[in-house]
Length: 403
Image (cartoon, rainbow, N blue to C red):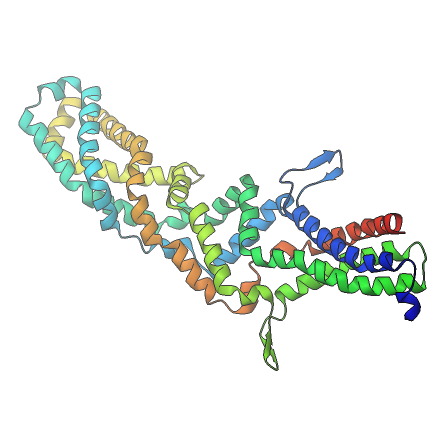
């Protein structure tokens, strides 16, 4: 031991644990960066790299939404909170103006002579009846949408497609949820690297084979990542040792994580605009259009009232059906603008953020862990391997630059 402290290369030996700490920290930082970036493949031919998460965006997004729908919320349950009467109240002012304009234009277009010569009193009665029926039409329409929401909106498909298109958003979900854990992985490389570096220094002092430092670097890179991952997720349940309580770091932060997860999902993914836009433009939009057309046609029949037989007699049933179709189609054209009126109320009624947060906080540890675990579960060997390889290269650097 005395020989060690008087050794002429003492500073170089002492530099080994310091450099090992830097290696441990650096390899962990780089390995984490390589987990999430780059978003797209960069390289030549098969040689290159794409972040582990972005490269499997569809799979990762699928896992995330499966956990969401199986353990936290369903779209059917959330839509049950929407009150059709309140929806009608929110839309009524615009629809009153819209109804008069659409009916005026449709009748003037399809039956100009009849409409032009119709008494003004009759026109007013038609408009008044149509406007009076608006709340009931909207209520019945919304009630049918609620009853068929599973056909009209595919939550899994919407979330997966959103995250596949926006890989940065997928990254942000994991990065924000696991912010403290990823910071711990980086710092743990420093601490574990220093401890392993002391062992590495002792080995090098007694046995200076050229492969000692590269091998030690490989083992340090491997072990620091492995230990960090273990400490994040294990143990699941708290274990008391004297005054201390030991539990996986991620699990300890359940309340904080639940708040962060609920916020990003509610503000970036399951927003009212996203949900209703998917219904209007998604694969089930034709089904929604059918529902709207059915209710508008019924409303036209009810509005026509006693004038319907006279109109059929003068214009024929085909023309009457054509007018109903035009009225329905014009309402459908205006639907994207009209539906915006209920976004505020829908956000309040669906209550995605508060529901997600409260239910996520109540999850047992085993289920809760699964929200971050998918980031590493199938591909954690890649993360550990990247750390090991980077550690090995750092070991070669120690060999050439220190000795």
